Length: 114
Image (tube, rainbow, N blue to C red; front, side, top):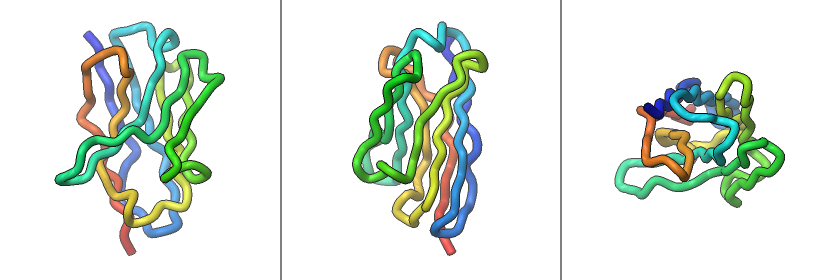
């Protein structure tokens, strides 16, 4: 069974940094593209970044490009999102997911506030 467990969120001041982790199990992690998403109340979940199974290719949406970096450790079957220069508009629940499977974790809350 596919399992995704996000962690690393919290309260941070504007300009601060956080590193999110997504520990996975139940599938051959290295074979699959993975993505980070976020969702705020009343809005649809949005894709932030994608990474290929090998980790050699990444894409980041414009709103986070240059501030967020997606990466993965295929030995640990873990996905990461390094978030720098966080702003109040980054406040959301953050999720990881493979586009291949229809499974979501519980997400991790990120709150950016002074």
